[in-house]
Image 1 (cartoon, rainbow, N blue to C red):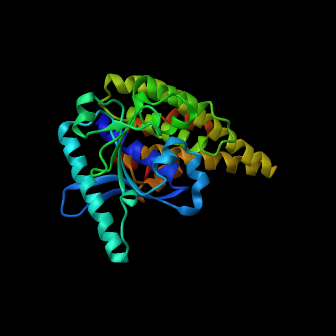
Image 2 (tube, rainbow, N blue to C red):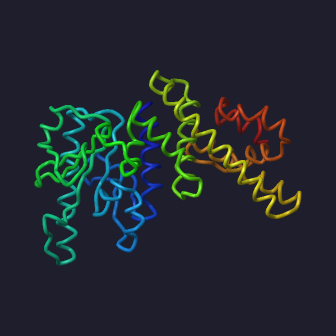
Image 3 (cartoon, rainbow, N blue to C red):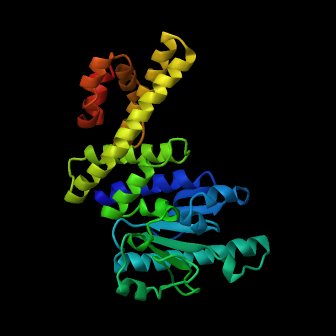
Length: 313
């Protein structure tokens, strides 16, 4: 369950930060194999500056690549799957070049990147992975024939350039990165969507019946991000209303932000919003402030069927 929730967050997070500069495909299927590549990234040539703003992550996606984030260090079986994926990625590159009538150089081959919090010497040796002087600590490369890069998140230097990768780490590494996101200037356009994703992840964990010790610690780290997102969401609602200069405008601004909060929470718990949820959302929009505060916890505790039965009629 922990792995599944991290998978959802990591894919949403990487899609969010990479989409402004690249074409991102989630869970790309490997033909004829029961395997999926988590993220397939094709950089947009005209968006070099947006990628540079992502530091080390932007450098990684400067050329077409596949990304595989892991919550735990990959097992030998997962490593074997990665080698298979890398082989398919390479073969696909040659097929694309052949269809286009081009000759493909080694430098142009698609790269498979593994993001892992830790990596034992045995794991790195199994892939023939070595550091390169032109890359920071924590980044390793397999021989050119494999085209696999490994980023050991907990070995990365704690600098702004590595922030967006360290956010995918665990324990103190991730907690430090979360605090750095919160500390970003409010005018930084990257801050708002990442706070929203962190808040959504917190809601997703708390809505589960099974929470392990690590997730309990993570909830504490995510709580400040959630509070920041909630506070800024409320402020945006107030500002929207004040800018309109009317009480009606103020109410509309608050309603819109309340709608965003309810929809975000429901999506975090149930992935998609079916038409039946429209009446549930409408119910919460109709409440006064006191009623809303009293009933909001039900969004975290009731099942989808119970919410629809209770508020959807």
